[in-house]
Length: 638
Image (cartoon, rainbow, N blue to C red; front, side, top):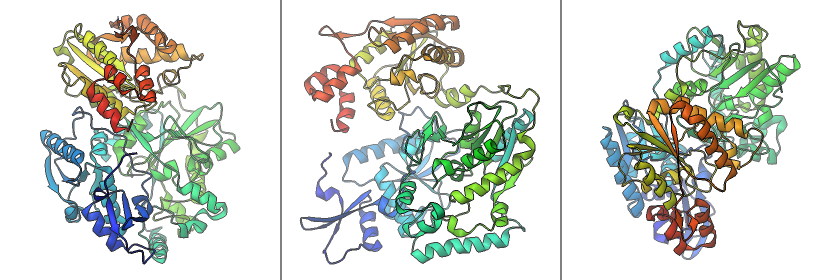
């Protein structure tokens, strides 16, 4: 627990004479001291706590990005932003604000700094409203959206973490259009889902929107994509029970962004399951001849529904029933429907083969087959009670109707044999270069250095042993690239581990610290590393991970050396090192094994540090990790 003094909390002085709090009282406190929690207090008695989650749904908030020491170059088209001052009573927030402001200015971005009370004046006039503190952002977003019902226009509320962690690739709708057409020429069928109002459906659409607004007016709530308690019985219809509705409405649809690829975060639960960024599809066949990939926003991944009632699961059931050997894959994620950059990156990551099908929602593209789902709704006279605030935000019954419509739209190509069906597409563009190299090494000129070396580190946490390995490597290499394992499968999060390494080598020259991305020691390329298992796929996955590094990453960066510490104990890591000795020389890379640093006859290891933390041996901890790492550790309240 972190102790915070009472005068630093957001507090409403309560007289105890009522059991509700007015929005006016909340607004006044939130403007003076925006926070995620507001405490109702009378003298020494705590009457209650109001969280922003009581007013607005914050399950979808993505906060996995990280301020990575300036290694990310900002989008050249972002020329000005609004930066909101934090509460001045928190010294740490002030320092972060100043650092972030200086960083934005150094990137050539015009920054206007305002106070919380001025936020409303700039809504709709700028692209980004940036906050250094997530709790303050939640409070201000909740205040303006759910209490004051203000129109945001094009303004996006964001924390510095989200802003700097966002994708930095620019692709226009026209470029996306050309890309999808090129996919069709290579033997991929593309079906574009749209919700387009036209002469055929305009009257239905107008009446539907009126009914949707009446629903929210009747319960006195702002029209947002949320199933309020008063709406549950009609929305969940035949599936309704209070327990079921409560379970579905509290599903945490979270995302993670790895090297620009925005995917649902892996999760296991009764109603919601995600693995490798793909939501579970019921009835997936063991053997299949072609694949249908769904890419797009909320209704694509199935918001407000359990796994077996997504569009994909309904479609898979229909395909199985009619005997098609086709697998349906749910690659939906949380992002704006109009953000073609995220969809483009997701499609480029798919292992497409000739004959496969992409179902993409939901911008209109010329020359691509369209399915107007608004026409489908009109045809079936879909009622407003099965939606939240829009036709896209729907329940399981509408998903079933959409799935049938998609099946009918694909009928002509489901059984179609494509020339060279099953053959991988020609890789005209290096996916790894686009996804990774250009993102983190845009300004790196590898030919300036004759000896570029690298170390891949997990650093759970960073120790003097890691520092020793880096110093020894720098004596042999003119420039050193440190890849920090980006998968969050460790005691310390990637954000914390990256900060530890970055701070731990700040004083060294010719060192670049970057995330490892999805291509180096990731859950996809080498899952055994994270679970320390020696299954039958160990050797295959080890070699695959190393080949990707040696053939697809090292040549771009002119890497000639890969440094590792010797590994006398960990079987999996030792197998990895042995495989590098076999494979890397074929790519012109020398593996250099450096003896590990000892202290008092024992190796300095991350596991030894973790043991000190368990035993709270702070004196021993000082001997194992730098002061910058101890600060990060203590922030976790060890």
